[in-house]
Amino acid sequence: MTPEPLRTALLAWYDANARDLPWRVRPAEHAAGVRADPYRVWLSEVMLQQTTVPHATPYFLKFLALWPTVSDLAAAPDGDVMAAWAGLGYYARARNLLACARAVANGCGGVFPDTEAALRALPGLGPYTAAAVAAIAFDRPANVVDGNVERVMARLFAVEAPLPEAKPELKRLAAALVRDHRPGDWAQALMDLGATVCRPKAPLCDRCPVSVHCAALTTGAPDTYPRRTPKALRPHRYGVAYVLTRGDEVALVRRPPKGLLGGMLALPTSDWRPARWSEPEAVASAPADAAWRSAGEVEHGFTHFTLTLQLLRAEGEAADVIWTRRSGLDALPSVFLKAARAGLNALL
View 1 (cartoon, helix red, strand yellow):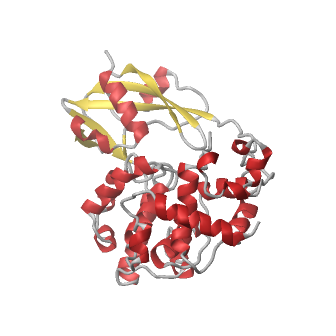
View 2 (tube, helix red, strand yellow; view 1 turned 180 degrees about the horizontal axis):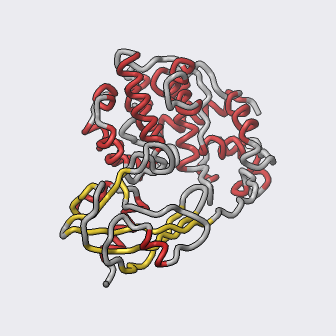
View 3 (cartoon, one colour; view 1 turned 45 degrees about the vertical axis):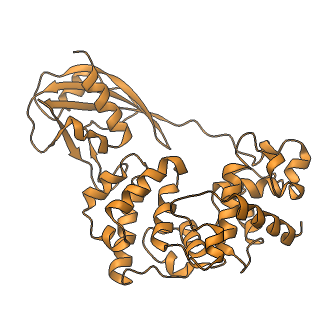
């Protein structure tokens, strides 16, 4: 494959079809000299890890309204940022977000460094995010490879090795297409192609600006790329969530700063284990001495395991909890918001 015709075709397509995203400088503006705000680029890239554009966009706009600059974010209390993040999942990203913001504010004078290597040195910035910020915000010729780009590469070159084993090869193939000319636009063009045309299922090959270069299309089954290793079954765990109320208030706790959902507000829970909890065990682990009654259960899926939370509900008092009005529960992570709503709505 000759790279230059492919690059020319894809960049021309991007110029005409770039998505309108709140963190993006459109190609015509970019050509006129407008540069992307590194803070917006970084914030959007962190949010978009494991999250779709439609889901991340309102969170991005909320963060900008609350904290317009990286220095504003760095000065925010941890609890406020974690609450604003609730619903985006993968809460270690929120902790890394704060660590990076404070490093930029306190160690870099509130200005993001403009090279991939210097960005990579910031806390919480992995290779992908550093490459994305370097390319999109600073026009550095960095190799930006997300899931969309992996899929495009796998199809363009009909890579037979399955994911995740194919990742190094896909990254090498993508790197061979990076140039000093318009590196930020190139990175975003590949992302847009994967998101809107070279989709995971039912790719729109008839609309693809680089279909003439696509080896997977010649096989007649481009949607079978990238090849994938069958996923192992996720283990299942059981826990108990306690919905303790005091009138219009619900008892919450702050989870430990490290680990799953670290630092987030949550319902009190038991440990999560492979075996279901008996009712006597569940009551014995409750956060208060109260008349606990079963309120059903909820199911939730995490990346590495699935979870059944048995729900117990009671009215009473407890020490070392954070009493929160029912109207304020929307800041809970989705698993606990789901459990709280189910427990509060249960007929007892």
